[in-house]
Image (cartoon, rainbow over all chains, first blue to last red; front, side, top):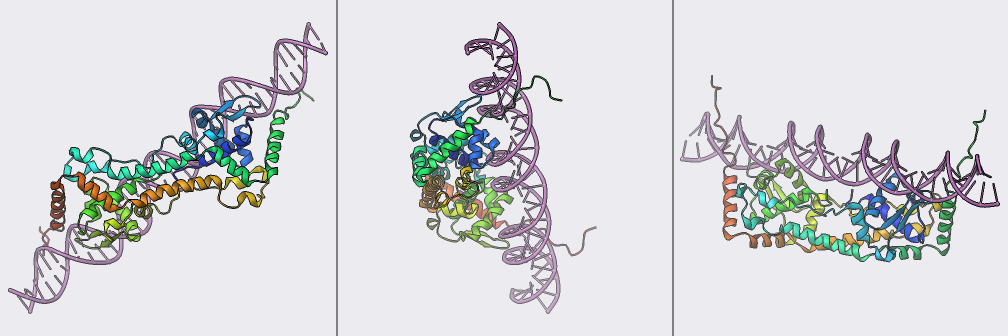
Length: 180
Length: 180
DNA sequence: GGAAATCTACTCGGATACCGCGTGTCCGAGTTATGGTGG
DNA sequence: CCACCATAACTCGGACACGCGGTATCCGAGTAGATTTCC
């Protein structure tokens, strides 16, 4: 798998829907079914986003998730870090200190400072993170909005509205006595 | 594990030694023991570097690997790609086309062009790759050289020289008749 | 008719299996320098 | 003394297990709304 996992992909897609939902609470199941992905897997992602302070959760019927901040103030980097944790691009194993010439006692000049190879990787990682930090969820949402026809926003609202309004409607009337 | 694997780390370290070896052939076993890592694992990495045209292999006793090009013309990106293959930073699963509102028949506007999320990731990946492409093995070697004391280069040459000169010396004299 | 109680369906949240990739190891085919052998 | 040859150790190269992280799933605790019931 690539460095950026499928969880990140799902997470950003879901947050884009939340950004378009205009502060309505959407449940993890709705978000999953809306996009045709596993509901249980999406449900596993959101607690991380909540702990990172990107969304707020509300319980019970009609509950769900909302963005905790305006979309324009949520960077893509924040989302990635929230879901994946601070996973480095490269983890240096300090090979330089194991050189056989040192016989187990590496001199100071060999282990001081940052490994040269590691330094290059850190530079590359920094470049990547800066690019992700420069893009916000709002930028993405605007780009998607511009791409879709004007009618789409209304259709989406209708689908979600119909969906949330029927929550709990499947409930069967209580019977005082069990029917024969 | 991080996106850049341990194989990449080992590979670059080995290539740095080759760059310092002044066109002497070093075997994968020598490179591994010199750095205190698994010889069999290092041996698994080098065929990839050879296929990519970064090193040349010579067989038999006194055989080993040599750089195929001057170190200043080998970029870090080439090494990474040679070992890991063209592994993307992010693989888009085209979630956008699965939207439930499309009912299995996504309209053209939804699937044309590059996914907006994917575009951001591609941009980040490009920034990372450009950084890696800007650094060459020669740059790294020069930095390491400047860090080590002047005597170290000689010690390394001595270790390697003593090592390669004793190859095959352990051979037992042939007996014409088996001893009783 | 109004208010309280109850029940249901829904929500979130964490603990639990499956699977693929990377890591690490092993063994076989081929090659070269060595040491012995014979002329 | 020199040329030849068989040997052995070394080389590369690809095929075989182990373990971890990501993917996917299930089940339990808790909550808000809707229905029912009683006054």
